[in-house]
Image 1 (cartoon, one colour):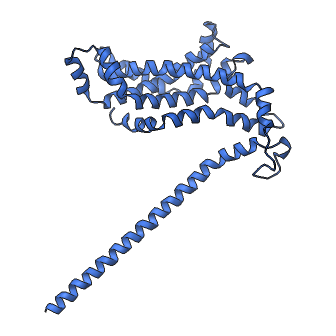
Image 2 (cartoon, helix red, strand yellow):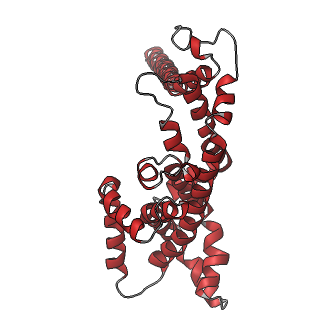
Image 3 (cartoon, rainbow, N blue to C red):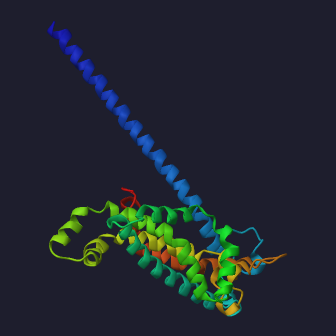
Amino acid sequence: MSTNFTEGRISKFDSSGKNNQLMRMRFKITRMAGYMILILLTIFSIFPLLWMVLMSLKDRDETYSGNFFPSHVTLSAYQFVFSTMNIGTYMKNSLVVTIATVLISVFLATLSGYAFARLEFSGKQLIFLILLTTLMVPGAVLIIPLFLLLRDMKLLESLFGLILVYVGGGLPFSMFLMRSFFQSLPAELGDAGRIDGASELGIFWYIMLPLARPGIATITIFQFMGTWNEFIFTNTFVHVDANRTLMPALFSLMGQYSTNWPALTAALTISIIPIVALYITMQNQFQSGLTAGALKY
C-alpha cells in the first residue's frame, strides 16, 4: 500500500512538473511572438521616416536611381528650401499661428472644462451638448461660411483670422477632454479649499490646475498637431505669400509633371521637428493624461 501511494505521489509530481515546463515554454513562445510583431510594426512605422530622411540627402538626379541609400550625402536640398523656397518665413508663420492657437485654446479649455465639471449654473447641460454637437460637423462643411465671415470681418489673408478659426475648431474637443479630466480629480480637494476660505478661482488656480498638467499636456499636443498640420483652411483663407503657413508651401513643391523629391522630403523633414520635439518634451504627461482624463465622464 505504501509503495503504491508513494509511486502515485511521484507520478503526480512528475505530471505537474511537466505541466509547469509546458506553461513556461508556451509563455516564452508567446512572448517571443509578441516581440516579433512589435519589431515588425516598428520597422513598418519607421521605414517611411527613414526613406524621407535618406531621400532628402540625395541629389535630384539620383531620385529614381533605385538606391535606397544615397551614393553620396549632400545637403543641396536643404539649401534649396532655405534659400529658394524661403521655408524659414513659412515656419515662422506656422509657429506664430500654432503657438497662439495653443495658448488661447488651453486657457479657454481649462476654464470652461472646470466650469462644466465643478460649477452649477442654469443651462449647463444644454450649453455643453450644443458645444459637443460641433464635434460632429465636418470641417469641410464650414469652409464657405467661415470664408464669408472672415471676409466680412476683413480678416482674410491674415494670421489672426486663421488663429480665430483654429481656436473655434479645436476648443470643443479640448474643453470636453479637460471636463473629463477635472471630473476624475477628487472633489474633496475643492471642498477642503473652501473650508480653508479659498475662492473658486483660488481652488481652480492653486489646487486643480497643478493636478491637471497631464490633461493640459494632452490638449497641447493634440492642438499643436492639428494646427501645425492643417491644410484646407489655411490654403483657402490665406493666399498672400508673406502670410502663408508651412503646409500650403509644402504642397506647392508638388509639380504637375515632375516633383523635386529631395527638396520636398527635406522640407517635410524640417516640418516634423517641432512636433517631435514637443512630444519628446511632454510624452510622460501626455501618456498619463490620455488615461486619467478618460476615467470619468
